[in-house]
Amino acid sequence: MTDSPIPSTGPDPRVPDPDDYVASPCTRVCRIDARSGLCAGCQRTLEEITLWGGMTPDQRRAVLASLPERRKARRSMVRWRHGGQPGT
Image (cartoon, rainbow, N blue to C red; front, side, top):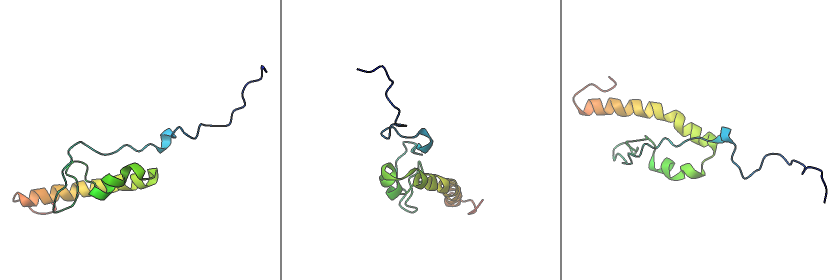
């Protein structure tokens, strides 16, 4: 036996880097709108929801970046369906 410390080999590759963690936008309101093809809760497409677990952090960030515009468009469409003007 030796008293020397075990040499460090760097971070454990099995442990995910916390900087790469991108949380799912799921709100547990899982209902796909037939007209838009988007989930009423998170505004993702069914394909994006299905593929989320296998996406890279950058791919997930790209999906997240598209969500504010989708939410805005959805709010506009809901107002229009209820008698308002589109885009207001």
